[in-house]
Image 1 (tube, rainbow, N blue to C red):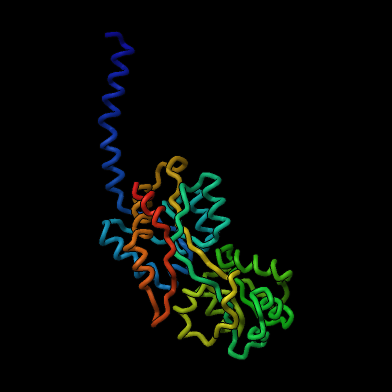
Image 2: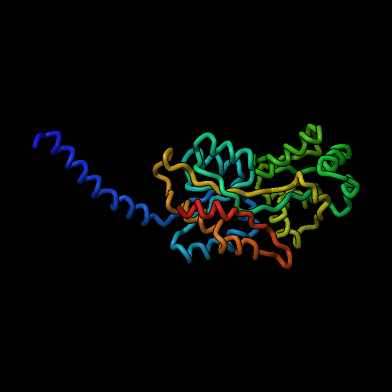
Length: 282
């Protein structure tokens, strides 16, 4: 037997020994790093779901609640294992550029514009979301923007663009904060702001604000979950990311999302595709 053949056989033997070892090591990593929006955290959804997931699977999820833009950047840098966000075009770009494997729809709700009880901009007269923003600008009624590149901020900027309004001046304030904090600031300033309905329902009872406008299809707000690409970032916990994805889009996970309510109000509507769930299992 020549040296090359011996070397080849040794390599095959080593690979045979390492495959189960690597699989075992992957399986023992029970920490999942999840970058997600402040809305899934502020609304209380994750506090409801994750203990059940952890009990079912043994995984421990470390939640990093930031704006969607920052969550996507953390995914692009390989600093997390999985992202749960709500900015569809940015999510699709994240996957197309090879940072993430596949986007799975998880749930949706909608955005609402909340503001002072007195409604100084007259949003009750608005026929659609763009008209509502035009009224705020015309009256120079104080508006607090997230200003943090979050999914909500991206949606807000898109709505101003559709309304043909360049928001600036003393009436337009950028907070650079998460949704819960922005709702508190808007309440203190007697101002308007755009918020996802889930976070609003979690804060509504302790806020002096009210919904000024809702119901426009433009305010639709879908959430997607994406595992960071292990081919690009081999140190990520891909097994854990897939376990979380499979659980959230499974019938059990979807039922728990559906049952998460404040009073009689459902905060999120499950939207996972049964075909995607079957594909995610394999």
